[in-house]
Image (cartoon, rainbow, N blue to C red; front, side):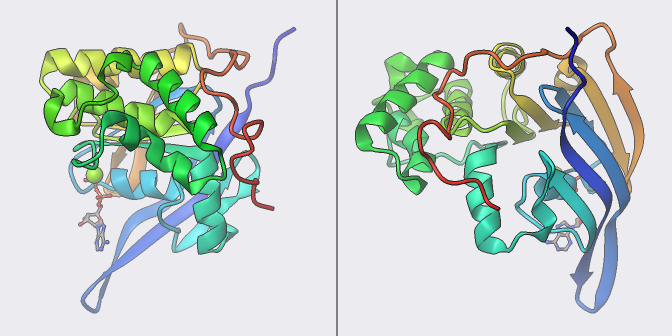
Length: 259
Ligand code: ADP
Ligand code: MG
């Protein structure tokens, strides 16, 4: 029996203004977008075109000036700061260009950090952290600090940290921007594995043509408008959620869903 695709993210006429001094600059102009659960979506465009701004709205790091953002049918643009922070802990994993690891903490401790915001027991935290370090191929590096790891390994720690709360959506802003092409390929293989095997939904902002070539759907933004939307029809979406790598956040009693 075939399943209708489920819309995980819906952006409805999102506008974003910033003020530079007294000047108001419109950075996003009425953006409309739907992202299906389980998709691997790339977002490309020139520097300053609004990629990070749009990603931050979808990930609940920022709110639109007008318009609405929905996630699994809940309007996150109507949430207050504390509801939004709670929702983010559950729903979104973040991967950054410069990894943003804490240098004095080990790989294990860096990955454990998001779980410290939850009410999970120390023992379950340890099991989750080990599970995701294994999933990214770094179980033999858990006691290493970031400075003792290669750039590619540091980014894999970053991905494990994004994965550890078992979020539905993983967002990555230039995840290969600081890596050579061999390391980039390893990270891309890993991101694709998150989609194909763990059935995560991925939104990846990138300048890297190798990343853009690997996503299933590719969006292009220019001057705050989506100007192109391409989809690889030969790659169907995974239909069903696979057995989760990390125990589901809800069954693990992480945090309550808002609302
Ligand atoms: P991209 O990620 O595509 O390079 P951004 O989304 O970061 O672009 O930025 C889009 C535009 O918004 C740029 O002109 C940038 O200078 C401006 N901008 C981004 N964040 C802010 C901010 N906090 N205050 C003022 N202007 C901003
Ligand atoms: Mg950016």
